[in-house]
Image (cartoon, rainbow over all chains, first blue to last red; front, side, top):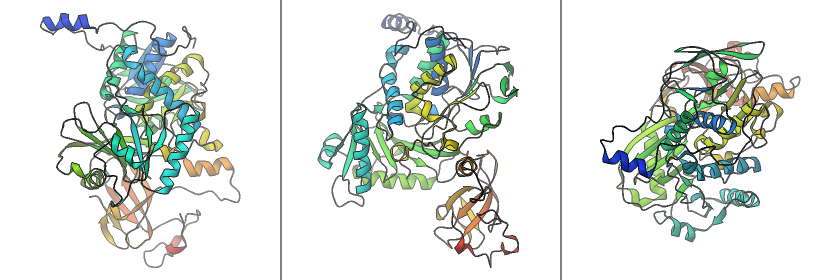
Length: 431
Length: 107
């Protein structure tokens, strides 16, 4: 496919119109019923240049960058439920780039840079609050990994340093840093540019941007099969009819194995839910995002004042997203070990989201053995923070036919070639 | 909490068990290629539905067994002693709860 525009950095080709202070005043003075729809509904066409399976942040970002950076607008995004109803609406909204491998650091840092500019680019406030991110170390081996990560990060120009208990207490006063807890805190990896983002706003912003460039977003449209001939994608069968296309991008999370099965692409993925929970809203008292691998928990306070708790993935593979009481029990115990002052807080709700785990805790991006079938999958517990960069890079791959250097290490073939990108020590709290 | 029916101990909380993942044939290390070995190590079917898998009764009898579970709703239709040795050969008549020597099995 020919790319019309040259690859540009963080600059929209044109402003995405519709939202402005003047519009707010104009609509506010009226009945406020005439706001334009954020995105439109369409009949399904008979063919598209590119079909993207999955209407989450990854699929919508890929569609947006295909249209805005490369002028490829005959694109359909197919979503079996509603936009952002999968992992994009179920994650804990944390963004950071203090990973362990040089490949991982470069990749996630590009995403952070795109996120920093995204509100302006999409003309939609994604509420990125760069409040700092702390990963606590409760033992010598974690502290050693933190030092290692800090050095890798600093070499690549990432703000990242190991801090001691006094500094931790100063940055996050509710944390118990005393020596007489079950898992005393020895230090933390502190990453000032990390923070939290309103995840739904990212979905809506990309959806709106893609729609304005002419991409068609199809909700309630389930992919039932993908037909190939001669090892090349030809057709996508959906619950609303068939589509002829030569390029399909699998951007699903949770169901990526099922889409891969349609064309016989094998991947090193097992699917497990990750459970999370949120408390009642209270006044702001916790600034930094706090993560503890030893206690399998991470905590942040949203702009609304709720505390969001995330954990590790459930211990066995499944496609069920049902929550469990023993999870809440364990989570509450761990949170109170970390912040005893929260004992009177009440939980509002809990939920689960599916995570496609890979053996090296890095994603799978790029082409496959089937011509025209590309993947952007295996996003485990780190898909939200990578949405912009994977969308940008996959769009470039589709437009130019060349795998960009930033995602080359993450190809699906790396497992059989024995070139893993080991991020387990930096990507999760489940070990 | 979800329960699993250990062939030796009966129904216990799932938190007592370790998960070993889907059953698969191990190629012979002496004759396999690197690619085959890595495919065995890493690739998974990951079905949404019926899955034959291995479990380990970590906080109980410390024995391995197999289960057939629906991954969409976690209903377990069957649990049984190991029918296959991890090396790939069939355990045959030894695959009964009483006399299987699971202490020699390493996973």
